[in-house]
Image (cartoon, rainbow, N blue to C red; front, side, top):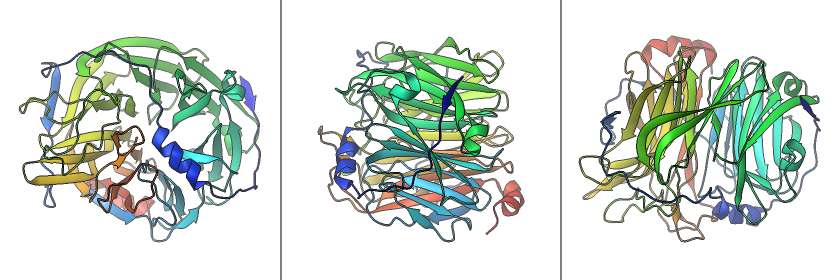
Length: 494
């Protein structure tokens, strides 16, 4: 096991907003080119149910325990990409280009400046996750040439221990390579970090999975780590709810029609990573050039997912099941999938046998960027972005939450459209429209039946470039079933 040293950093630099604006239009960097093929109908193996059209009176059997609008001071990006996690009344929240924490369950917030808190060069993605076993908040911040991993007690959140991570020091990669599109998941002993690798010219060179010893991170000490780099995969994501075995997956490159999911298994008591391929129902890969359209047919709602691809976005383990989800391009027939949608693959944990191919789709809107997490029962809570419209009805991108559990065991489960937007995607420098790259859902580990989630929406429909700050509504919510309200009030007090 290799070692990684901590450094308690206090230096700061002037805000480099121009750099962040430019990077907003470059990232996420594109993966390997795929040849195109086309799925024209829904496979008989796919079980699915369309989500009821969104509206203020949408019926839902889930309950919103807390619905907080997070104050955004200073510049907010037109590509927000929010992340959050919560421990009791302590919440940490990030987005582009802000960071905040609350010690009273969202009643008041304290802002941190990602441009200056850990030095200069901040560009974009931030991700956060909480380790309940150590009450440790973990915060990953992307810079132009490195990542900073910061740790703090969830009872603090203003004082951070930091680790500087580069592909060269961490992975032994060539000079000039950089990280992009990062994620975190917590196991029993290890923190799992995944990221793509790109060369100095912006070409994809591999994807990495690293695990770091949590005891060392909690002590702000030198900590051991292991790593694996794959050049045959693109965008690994480790399942939330990981304990003593980590499961990660990548959509395989099957000539445009996905028919295989590649799953990696990494026991915490071993340094060996094993790989299995599992056949799944074929789907249409999305890429910036594949022709997907999340807008309304009349163009009032623009094509806000034009720069999206089919990388793994959601991953969850619980109740003997492992699930992965990703965006899929529309089929096009009015009776099938007229808008881009989300595919969910469910596997039995014991042997990774495929249990179900399921789609979360709408006939009036697209559903993209699902993030999902298990609670302590292994039930699933999720958040996604919806938008589109038909005829004279228009839905600018907003957010939906859902629960898949013993009451509603199949996707979409029980849903609630809790955030409605007022503007479409920004215009990227490559001429394509863009929304963001991820939402975040986290399981309530202190009690079953609660999930935290964050998403966002624009509050105006001005035509902005993706490097231009824009006003947004940034939401941080807790939701569950009414049966679990008492548990929420116990573990998440004001």
